[in-house]
Length: 604
Image (cartoon, rainbow, N blue to C red; front, side):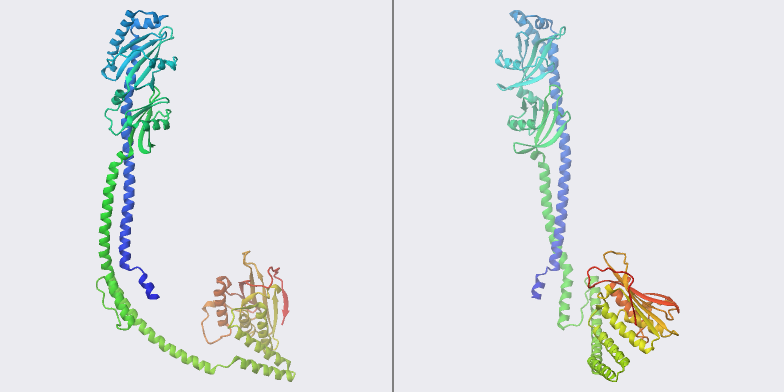
């Protein structure tokens, strides 16, 4: 199963090849994406400038033509005969000769305007307020008065003094510019001036110099004109989305008839129409797409070259690795004892030298460790041979206690029972790390009892413990070493009677979520002339039941509860010495403790 999993793992050569190809491909894709976006952004700016320039040219042509048309009306009114006829109370009663003379003057004035230099004006006519018609034909074709003229007058606002632009559905190829005429003396309306243009010729004049794939659109609320009849649907759709309120040039992308177009539009001042220059987006971006195709070809070619290069490089890198793996397998099979020199790359040479040194060190370590294991095994055998069964000792102590009870020697009986309990506690402490405080104090009391019998009541002991803490868990034998240290080093050298206090109570930890208890051992022995550093106490065969016990307890508390739980020593020589520590209240019988620092005194 293990061999199968090893074969499923990707080889280093494959990884290098795939990694190099991925890095090159991702880098080129990101660079291509960045290049395309930046190029498109630059092209959009260029297109916007180009559209703005084209729109300004178109608008300039339209404005020039409108200015010429607008100036034609005052020019015609400069004819005295026409002006008198329009201002007369009944202009419809003039004779044929007079009307012919007026039209002859109008024709003469028309050919003095810039409109005559172009071939897109069909006719010019003036209709008086009484319905008299004065008509000249500029295209050479005779056009009698028709219902179209009546339709133009039907919805005409005679109070509008500005030039107006109109189209009629019945005359699709005609464009009308209209202006009301007013008397210079009275200011009253006296007629309407009309110029009829050939829409197709006029639009072609406006788009001269424009790219053939582009077209222009003129529109207002009532009409829509396009320079290319094939784009009429697109023009109507564009006009329905644009507004006449924007006086500045607006450049945007529009979806017209399901295709994308770029459009630049602007409202003209007079008449109130808007013009737009429109071009298909796909034609404009054709150069960019061709550049992108070339870049994609280059991308594929680069990836293929990178793949070939990565295969060659990976072979050069992995060949020494495969050789080394082969020789390592030979070493593991026992057919070889060291790696040969790998001189292709410096790193592999250092690797093989270090590996050979490691093999020698492992061989030496293995031999030394084998000898140590033999010595340890022999020592364990000797220890087992000399080990005494603890149950045998308990039985002997029970026998001594039974004999003492028979002869009514209560003191010896209690001492033997206390010693037995201490031995039993020492044996059980090797099987558990924590014990209830109540049980721990039983062992401490047994020890104090034996020491009091030894020193013939030279030592008084008081135990002050908050009752609610008795069921809490504490580390095994965490109090007895402190009591032993206080008796052996503090009270035993002291002349006269000594006092020992064991004090355990809840302590303020400064953290509402973790309660603590403080254990303090207080004696009035000789104390310390200099507070020792417990960590620096040397390991020695001497004083194994005293200071070494403090060092071991200090280390146990630090490992179990952290730096905060380490032993603290305060001492005034020959007066008072206190050794204390704080540990968390880990497990108690009651869920909520009503703890106070004042406890009960138990004198022993």
